[in-house]
Length: 477
Ligand code: GAP
Image (cartoon, rainbow, N blue to C red; front, side, top):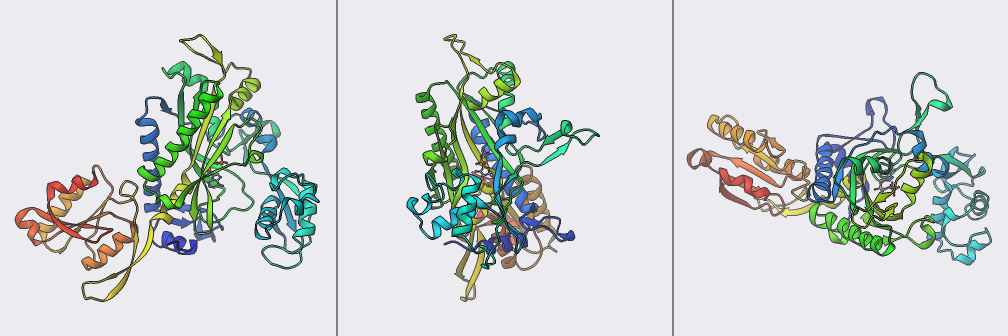
């Protein structure tokens, strides 16, 4: 069952997963800060990605490049020239739309065929493949009304909107000192390719992983954490021999690994995940293929992660722009070549969003008085749950119970995020933990003082069992 996004947003704000950005100053639509549970959820996802793909693999290493990279980086990558969106304004309302997006919606909703759109110069149904003039003609003729106000629009021309944020380095604010905030983390790994080869024993095939902030001046941010202007990525660049057959094999492996990580390691529901292969006309000229891992968000299927086979394009571009040799020399065969690259690009912010959607449930149950009740329960996989154990002394005035509870908290919190809660009726404390997705609640009661046992309550089944204090930790597996 899917809950509306508004329900997820309200819960995430109420429980301290996410806060509205700078809200004492009125906030800003579609910008968010992570609260205490959100930051922990994000960290757990990030750590598991690192553990699976860096720590547990001998063919992978990690690195961390600066957000402000050398401006030539973006010339080489093509971002300074091509990283923009087509924009159109409705003069009547002052609203701004992405031209390709409103065209796409029109084609989808009205189920337009290629024949219908050919008169606007379309060779296919992909809106981005049209010129600005063709997009403008299409919109003026086919979308006369403003999509949000539903009133007659007065459309401007379609214009280019640069999506990279920039600032200035040093005291003088002129073109020479202009420097961009990276719109993706990927380039940090390409520009350090030679450094990795020179300073480690990595040999092709090998990969580099990074995690960090990226910035895009999105025209239409929205859908909560799905599209924001500041977000985090966990990208990998995996270098293989410049041979398409070898490259395709690695591409398939990374596709499967990406899906396996989402299902088996961070525990997303299989029915909420699928692949979408990019059509030939969606691919860049150098690409041999791209798959998105899609997630079923409340508004429908959408991208969660990309896996792209980018050939030798990026390293060749950096070689040409920097004049530095990006060739790899195979120590066994002596063959010299620019490696091909497979890029699994995990969005961290979108994975946090999907984790919250995947976990959230409103469940009906019968309470201890036999009455029907509803509880909100976040069924996070225990490894990504923000808090693993809640430690609950039944009676906070009982010194012995408090002593056992405090000692247990000290011990468990060396390894796991725990919460100590001695406030209110035990049922209420359980509900509080269910709502933030804590898999195990440990209650210390009078029997604990006599025999050193505690009750452990399981979030999903609500079942309780009595275990020895020393055994509690085993539940994390
Ligand atoms: N280096 C390739 C690259 O950046 P992308 O498809 O533009 O490819 C990769 O981005 C991932 O980054 C997406 O699958 C998504 O998870 C995340 N992402 C991209 N733009 C985003 C935004 N504005 N807000 C949140 N996440 C975003």
